[in-house]
Amino acid sequence: MFADNTLTPKEAVRLCALGTLALGPTRYGALANSIRHFISRITGPSIDVMGVSIELLRYEGLVEAIDGNGMEDDAKLVITEDGQAELKTLLTANVRPAATEISKLVVALKFRFLHLLDEVERAVQAELLIEVTDNELVRLDDLRQHHSNDEGYLVGWLDHDIDLLEARLSWLENFQKSLSN
Image (cartoon, rainbow, N blue to C red; front, side):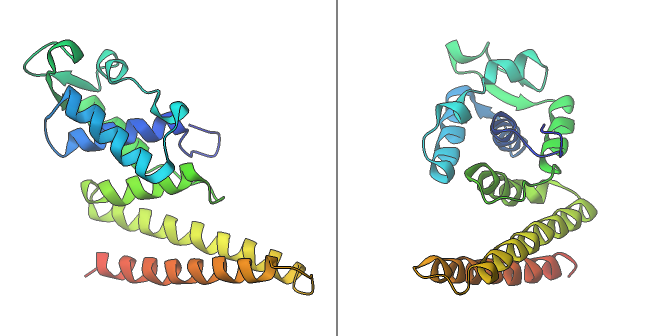
């Protein structure tokens, strides 16, 4: 993890792999395809992000084969207790404040696997996502105000992004309320 307790790109892939296995046993090939499909649809194809090996997860004891050896025989894989603990650590990590492709991926993974956390942990994550969105909104609003009299199209673009963030914030606040019902 980065110093601010946010995920590196490789840790985001680990989260995707472990979360997928937490949903149920999955064959090696199907797991690899699922990870590749989800991540490439959020971030686009990226060698840097795709570099996490399922074999490394097996070596670290986070996943294990239950009916085979691994990639060579397309073994069915399951998450271990250590893998469950690592999943929780990854799933409860902070989100980087800047709107990057990796931040977008981490948020999407949180929503994909949030139901695997307990009620209190889900509420904490909802609050974290609200705070990150609110901070991003403040940052863009400050930039917009600073350039409000500039020529060109920047203010229009910033207004568009601010509108999107305000809609996201509203959605997150409604989501947070739904968690407590």
